[in-house]
Amino acid sequence: MHLQEILAERPRIERYLGEVLEEHVRASRGESRLLSPLMASAREFTLRGGKRFRACLLLAGYHLGGGRDLSRVLPAAAALETFQSWMLIHDDVIDHGETRRGGPTLHVAMARLHAAHELEGSAADFGLGMAITLGDLFEAFTVGLFLRCPLPQARVFRALEEYRWMTERTALGQLLDILNASRPVEEVTEGEVLKVHRLKSAIYTVASPLKLGAILAGAKEARIRALGEIGEAYGTAFQLRDDVLGVGTQDERTVGKSTNDLFEGKRTLLTVHAWHRAGRDGREALGRVLGNPLATPEQFDQALSVIEETGSFAHSESEIRRAVARGDRLVARTAGFTGSDRALLREIAVALTERTQ
Image (tube, rainbow, N blue to C red; front, side):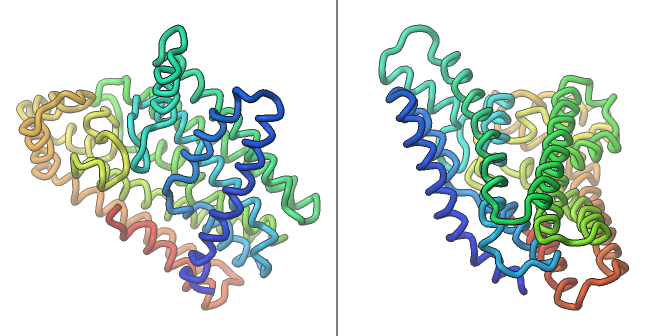
């Protein structure tokens, strides 16, 4: 099976996800008519764009684990999309994001709903509270979707244990990311940045989706473990590419978010590497932009020049190649993979790391 065959399943994932979320909208109306507009907004947020790549990686893991009927893990694939949704909802609250996937973030949408209906109290506080709680609700939907898989109970429970581990790692990575953003840049090491990338992104973006699919296929533990290690390598490269894309432009249409990693003050490999290698003037130029959404275009360009002149873009590209090569070596030496299995994993690596958005 080739990656394009798996990606061709995206419309089916989208339809299934939409149907399940519509069920939840109707069920909420049964509890209170006031709930359904809130649920409908969360449904729209979840279905608004998105590549569904994590869901497709679960399907790929199912195939690599020996599974053949992809429809049997369609609920689990959709579960990764509800997981992604509540992670983005909470992430946007943390980052004070205003747009996501070409529309308002959920807390902004909820604040607008408050204003449109002239409700009492603070619209901003209402928006934050609603978004956080709707995100919590989507976590419950995620578990429910795993439980819908028509597979042996032992496999589903094993998948839920992997999901629990994935969620825990992601939260730990988020905690470290928030902490690092609050520390002076000079105190943050490249190793700490890569630790965040592994915990916050590589595991839930690539490693666990592949493992979850293999678990649901009933694969042996050695195969599951190998896919996890390969996924962590490719997933780290994916996040490093995301960092390059996230700092290299002020145009939100390129990355689908309302701000730039520099303006958010993110401690990426680019900024940490540049800070440690820049002179005083360079650090001052970076400092005027890091964490400052009001920085001028001229200040932004100066900061980008520092990143370029310190070799930080080249360094990140080198780390991307290193991570991909590590994944490739794992693929090559893992026993039991067929030639087509290895070709599929290579296609996944390319899709994750050789992208422009």
